[in-house]
Image: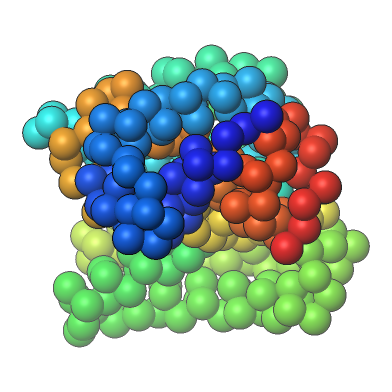
Length: 300
């Protein structure tokens, strides 16, 4: 059975994001228990080992479903830049540490993935052989940034207006009917019309020509969600999970070792998966369970 004291320490560390060197004093003041920093470190290690099998099971599950969100963010390991990758579906999240942003490990992990991959526009994801949906919120942000840089570029405004009209039409159907292909496929004609417009117009400005190339390059990945039920048009799921790591990153600072960050990520994966499923992390820790199917046993 998972020790109650260890569960409490992990709850403070992961969900409440109490700095590791502050947990001992907290426990001492609240419960009168003596807990040194080395003991806290050892509890984190033992907790990560305890949930290693669950972590591996979660990764297998998220990379074998019908839909997968992926994103990545930087982390400092004793002053050296590294990356944390997020793999998420609608119910589970897994955080993976890597020394670089090289996406080759993603290609390998998803070599047998046959669902829809939802990501931003990082070129590394292009090596994954499966249907892909690019985050349209990222695209909108980039369009807005371009307009801010060239506010008097009428061509850019025209192109942006046409894309916004198309997207507004599609998202209107999503809001009304949900992510159902029977209601969304009708917009494919409008998508074709948009692409014919940008291809047949004699654009003069460099910015708009660059945008035309970007639209054409990503033609097969911007509106994939029109052909699949339940596929989002954005990568909000992964971005939400990234923010949870960023909060924890602020607490860790840059002092964690590679082994230490891997331990944090195993525990954070369990915590965030609990959150996605509406389960109390503390109660899950107290239950001592460590199998994926036991997530249903401790609802909030």
